[in-house]
Image (tube, helix red, strand yellow):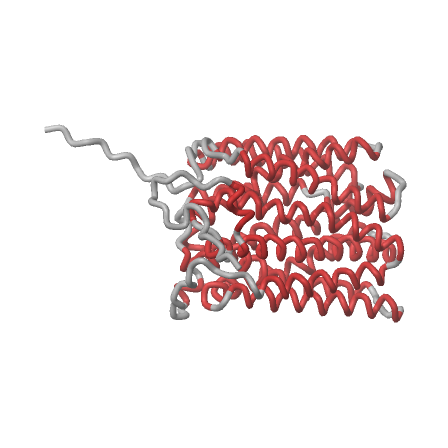
Length: 430
């Protein structure tokens, strides 16, 4: 049996260029990390499709769809400061594995309630809150785990490929969830449970290249240190807040059951395809970025991606054709992934490892706010103005946010690289 050779670049000097992306494929740790991300994310996406179609079938209310997002957001909001400190003090692999086991248990309750005929709308909201609480701990634990799995020089490549894990899951998960839900809600929930269980088993076996940082003593200052760090880094603050407000206003995902059923006149399989379309575009974007990373002017690329995201949202809002809607969502996903990769890379490359969990927790709150609270916002506005008008207004608002943030955060707009930029010091002249 041959002993695996160390990853290229692990012990290289600081000025050595990053190793080729193919070296990540030979890393057992990264393989398991990537596989666990795919399984967990795919299961969550299947669960989202099943919950969305199930609650809309029970209530026929866009507002009820928004409440599912709110139920997932509230635990994340309330637990943000706690989960970051937990991720920095305890084994991040164990935290993520326990959370995935909790999500597995929630999926089993969904399945039991479906087969038994006692799954009601209030219970769906309660289970969605349980899943939201588990993901509040899981997301920062997994995000802050990556720098311990691969050498720092490979983080931009690894981040792009890790993002592709989510996008792969968002293609496979919704499509599979829609097909399974077409067979029956029970089989869809059971598949979610099996996938979560496999993710938990895989996460617990991820080997680390670096030892975890020493546990810092718990204090009020250390609990709030993640927020303080982000406030002191305008480039990171600008990237996180841009991503937050862009998706908050432009997110149409929560309304896809309405579009599939009432506008495109299709069924749960079509809903799965719609949810997969944006992920397919995002996966294409992440593969491109993995081979051609954003080495120069990442801020401008991020703003361009957000504006394209808004334009694609507007196109989707106008569409009454399935093919046009799928293309618009694919473009939306491809443009959104630029923002995601820039945000994740900035956080991982500009944050010390001993507080990466706390900073990642705040980052996860921003993401959760944009996704889950954005779903609630979409449900409310759709209840007021109708689904199509709500999506159109959201797309225009996204473009407006991007233009405003270019003025408010010039450091992000003009950032030359993803790494921390040291001030240039001129040589003294006698």
